[in-house]
Image (cartoon, rainbow, N blue to C red; front, side, top):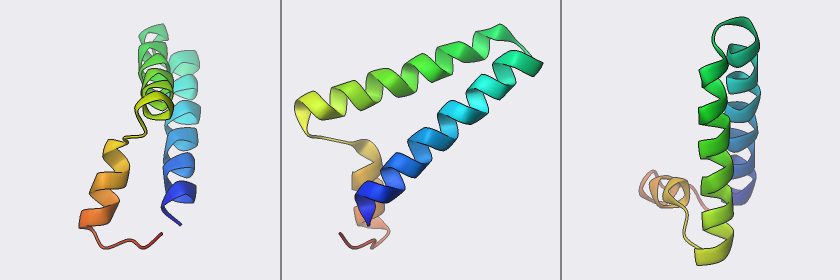
Length: 61
């Protein structure tokens, strides 16, 4: 369950930031890059801040 939520949040952030970059300001692509770097970091370190937050909110695996 947590894994699906993390993927959904990351995908939503990417889509929103791309739309903001297209329709508002190109600098929103930095946010897209930030999401990508965090996904890469979590794949290397096996640590994800959002998973910790979901744990504290009581979301089960």
